[in-house]
Image (cartoon, rainbow over all chains, first blue to last red; front, side, top):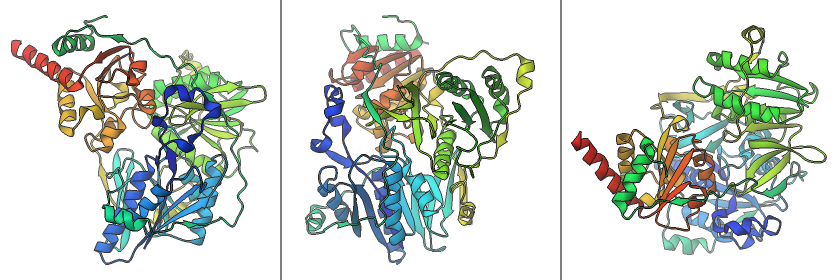
Length: 264
Length: 320
């Protein structure tokens, strides 16, 4: 059994001050603290949990985490090595420079998985709130694989000898047994964070080397025409601070606001 | 510009808001023709859809063919409703048609040479303008809404809108063999409270400190006749279920009053919470970003304020 996860390392944008965003044209994210995409992290943990269930059933399993990015600058080597500490069999970097293009990234990922087939490719629903979320859809089309969205959990079933995934579909939770390779996007997963690992695992991971793999097909960069601008029309409200001497006074005013009795 | 509108995920409770949102977007474009199709499952909103269609003087539908690139039938832009079904449908459609996809489109903007779709980037810290023509645009649920005058009933009744069986089954649209994956079981979920329609909301952030404190917030909300919502980090910590999340990846509020306890005010959350007519922030950090968005503020320990509100509601109950 082989499980693949596509993830992205992104700057923690909340670490920038509001005034820095006004200098949009000169922003340099290389110095900003990096993190896994907030929906990619549950996908990474889900892959490890599937692997746990495979091993519990005596089923051999490998896990590979794949990301695209520039070896210098946009990618954090410590975050890549941490995945070894967490338990991934392999971590692969597809070198990529230039502006991000979902279609281009999907083509690169697809060429990797076409050469290194897996039973299930997991991705986060999107990198962060408000992002396009298109990579998994393009990836499924490139690989001609079924796409499941909004995975909440997954595990290996010993009886059926299949990976079973549970997806949120409308008002239902539906569980599918996979008969072939598939792509799944992870949404509001039961396990939202990558597992903790002991210091010894982190020390051992320092000796591991992540792989770099260059896509054979040079995928032309498309769909990168974007013009950036600072948020227009964002109004900073003049916040009125509630005049109350103590918590009880403030509570009374807040309840009056809720009941419609108060107008400050 | 020829626009193809696809309506999916419309229900009686949200149809008017969704159509007003679509009206705001479509009316901002130089549309010479607008076609509409809607997803099977929206039939109980047919009246609302036909009213809007009649206002827009929509032509009879030339359906979007998945086999075609879209260019052949002259469609410049495909615009999809910003419901959860619409988002998934629009993204699958874009991938199947190999078109660029602009998700969460806030508005359209005309530049010197072309029309651009405006959407949030960098976790809502900035805006990106992307070429709109030749793309699939998915409307953001939040954003400007525009009233449309309901059409005369005779005009409305004459509208024929094709319905397409856009099934959102597990698998992409053109991979019918996805059905070979075995459906093991299907469990219905408890119907989530729709925070987007709630009039009064108490919103809890990580500042609450624990699952027990969020439970207190829920109990307080119940006593005050309000709904309880949370930020995404609260749901990810397991303190609340994901259906209570407010923000870009959760519910967009249109409440009369929202009181936020222990919420710092991150951009994606505020895209959802700032729709409230009156936002009150309770946070012990006077520099918390939420005070830039809030109409009223209390700089105090949110747990102390909550305890005082609990005490007051208990006192009033005893007096009654």
